[in-house]
Image: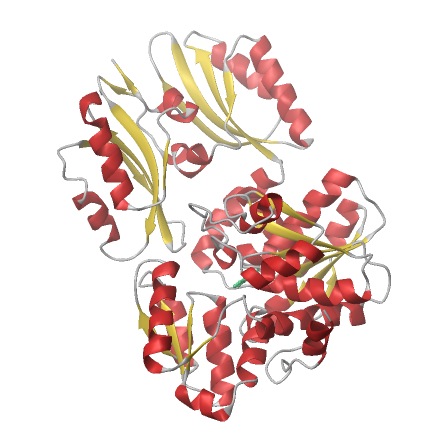
Length: 506
Ligand SMILES: Cc1ncc(COP(=O)(O)O)c(C=O)c1O
């Protein structure tokens, strides 16, 4: 512990990093009946905290080592941090990036004089290649999180917070990817002020630290969600886990919609945009207040980054109200007879309707997919469902149904009469030229594609919903094909959104 404190106190970060402001979020504070503060790491020169760890690590290397060159693997903020640090210190930096990396990020590294090597489709492949080059070319590998000097560089954020806020602090909320940020901040804060809670925050589909702490050892997640790309890590670091086990009080997991809602809160208070990983801290903070009911406390969230493609904001804005429980999505079956549609609208009453899709199903009934604005959250939603059921209208809550939110709400066409043996899958595949073609070419087993929906979400991965007709006898062959394809996927054939709105009816 003492070694780390010394390392943090002597870390070299201010050649490149600023002491970022700790700002009160007035609106959110009022809403939550607590004093909420935001540590503005999004204001750093590379728009994330990552340059602290990278610079501290690289600044400690000898001239001879710097001259041999440094190498890292990253498609994101670590790449920018390493490139900037190397430029300042006159070192040659090689950054291995997956081929899926958007051009804008590749260019940003090149602008800082970094050499880019594009390799593989995933971070794991790029990482392996970087480690190979490290050995072959005698370069020094700069790990994004699992390195004491990187951890110590990040720890300077903890040092600043305690200096900026000598008054009591209930808790600090910190995004967790590989764990380097939380390990650094926790080490410093717990040493001086052990009463302050250190709370990690992870997306529910990339909860590698949550799982590791629960199971008492590091786990490798099969798949991770990529919405919060800054923290999409399958396994936390060894050293970061060791520190977290001792120093982290708990890890809170949040949904994509909750991250989007927190992004809006940050915008409302600061007029700045956080990237999803940057909004994680605030999302966890809100959930903590809701769960514990604390009032009158000082709560701090670290906004650790702002690197987001503008295109993605469409998706963020779409989800923010759902994440705040200010919108409900429902699928309602209503009888096809005069007056029944009006009766449905009476149940909805004067509430604002955010979205309305109505489709004739058959002579007896119709399906409605509706978005309704809520002013009293979950309780109000439950009342609407009760009222619908009382009127004899079967209704399904779609507010947490990812497939319905990503795809079905944008699809028209309804049930396909006579379609047989249809399976429904949701896929993620790398968003780069030719990826969709590769996906479709691989499908050439004679299986018919009966449904296809793709919508650009402005992220590095495309999300596709696909219906495929596979006769029962070929099912195991199909399962094998899906496994070999290697794209993250999810079988949605039994999803109620599919059954209600799309499936084959003979
Ligand atoms: C914006 C942002 N937030 C959080 C993290 C997670 O940091 P760590 O991997 O140290 O847990 C990263 C990592 O790159 C990041 O870029």
